Image (cartoon, rainbow, N blue to C red; front, top):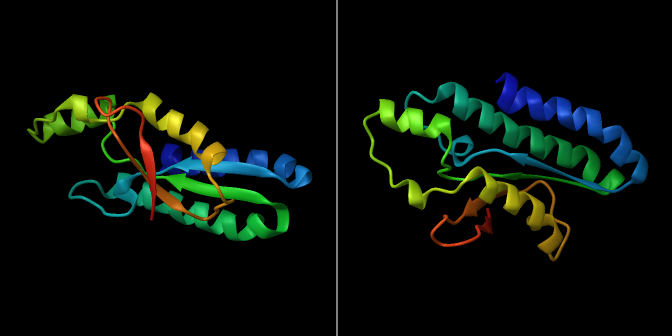
Length: 142
């Protein structure tokens, strides 16, 4: 909770005064598909990522129209991280790591998504799709 939910809350709190003053800005939170649909033994992780979706939605309602600030969340599926490797190993799962996204794939989506968005969308949670083998991830708005 301290990293997945409190961290983005504190970062948003720190940046909001300056973007509100400019009356323009974008805040993108990295949530997870697990924030939309939980899984057994993942209560803390799923709750924190679900809370991040709630935070993004509330911030969007508070600042989008009044200050022109877009607040959105990206919800990637499988990402090849040490935490994911440990969890799958402990569960006895075999995962083809080539089919997983890398953290840099998610960063690329976060950087390029607002720039390529045709309309100023706010309050959205978008699922990041793609894999290393498939090239750059794309976004599907939910």
